[in-house]
Amino acid sequence: MLPPLVKTVGVAGAAKVFVLAILFLTTSGALFLNYALFRRLSWLPFASFLLAYNWIVTWGFANYLFGLGLWLWILGAWFRSEHWSWPIRIACFSVLGYVLVICHAYTFGFYGAAVVSAEFAIRWHRRHDLRMWREQRLWLALAQFILRAALFILTSPSAGSLAFGAVFRFQTKAHALGTLVNTGTFWPDLTICMALYAAFAVAVWRRWLRVDARIGWLLVAVVGLFPLWPDYILSAAFAAYRLPVAFALLAIAASAPERVEDGRRHYIWIAIIGVLLSVQIGFVATQWMRFDREYAAIANIVGDVPTGNKLLVAIPEDDRYHNPNEPPVAYAALLEGTDRHIFVNGAFVWPQDNSSIHLTAPYRWLQDDPAWMPDYYPKQVAAIRRAPFTADESPFRPKILAAYDYLLVKDESRFGVSLSSTYPMVAATGPYRLYKLH
Image (cartoon, rainbow, N blue to C red; front, top):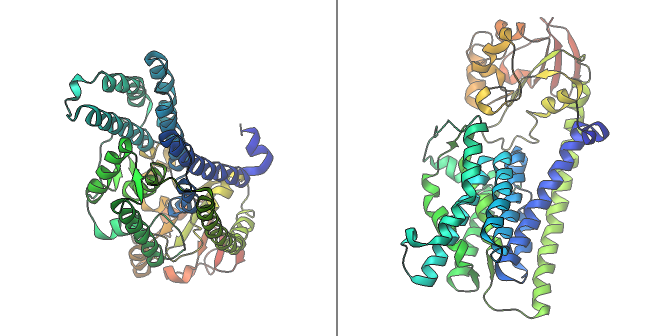
């Protein structure tokens, strides 16, 4: 049974509402945490609005980003609740923290790291030693994680997986560092992001900005550990890619101008951020209007697939980071298929990906076959071109095609195949072709 919101606005409309909720939570969370730490609101946390549209949003890590916004809010509430009695505080934040577990395990880990970092910083500031076994505050703070950890172990499909991906790959880390913004092209993104990192470091070093000590320890730790941060943790990939956005939002929220500025300068900075945000919104809106035409084409083609059928999608990508292949279309058919009750190959089919999809026995082999993914990268495309009907990477093998009713392919010439002589074409729009397989 579909939720009322989905029934009202459709799957695509509900997805847009959820994205808006993500943007609201991440930006307002930075504002709230900044106020909770400094007891006043400076212009700086408004800069979080400029980071709201980033590559992590484009790649669709929606549950992670939603949890990231909640993390900022819950962390701010933790600092604002210091006057509460400990039993009430532990009970409330045990429940709130489990919400983070439901959203994403990474945000649960971020929250725990932030609380521990804060308690270490408070101990050092008051006593100038780190003998934390004597610190009752720390043990009381850690009590809120007992219930969460137990529920995570008992309920999460990824709780028993401690698999780690590659720890250091220069290309991966370089791409990860460029994820704070999204211009659609890697090198401008990386250049802008590196300038932002450098500007923040210089501002802190020159004491133009001060970072709240309770969060500063965690920020330093993240910078030091980033080169060793793995790509894959607890069944979730792209761990290194997700980290810079969390770091940037936390750094902005935990910082304030060293001097209390007069009202005029405060509003000048906010006006500058507003102008930059207007330019960014105009750029994003222009991109989206262009993208919508291609998404509409995919929606029209998928509309020709009868309800209850199985649709195989094959999309050639320019590189592994969907760049500069615009717009990202690999999963557009998956979204349309959800609305029409069509099975489409795509993300979250594997059980280790926390899937709610359970394939029946005749199709369970797809879980271990590369053809379950709709997007194919340059090395895979090259292998398919050499042997389009026999290569292990190919979605055009007879065994694969026999498991589906329809095939949606983009730029089939790039795969080195010509399917129109074998299968009847149902629809064609631009580079997209829909074939009936059976």
